[in-house]
Image (cartoon, rainbow, N blue to C red; front, side, top):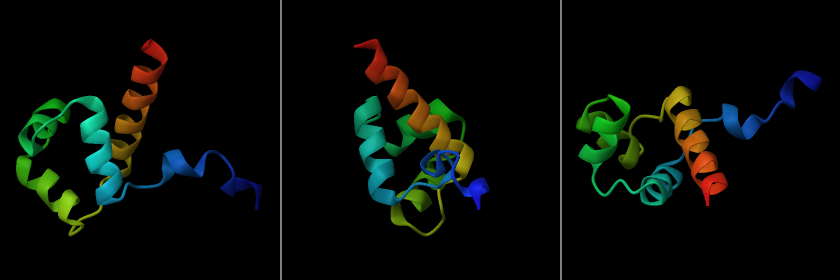
Length: 74
């Protein structure tokens, strides 16, 4: 069962609340701002925020890495 251990948090998707928090932390004020920044449609962001569709893992990982990089910069 050691296969489970490598930073499960980074591998997990992201809840709508965590996505909202990530948007605020990174300075994205609107769904459109985030959509343009990561190359997806505004409707995709809307579905993630409503919890109708899960945030894709690569997107969740990207946002977490951007937050970590921003925290290191200050």
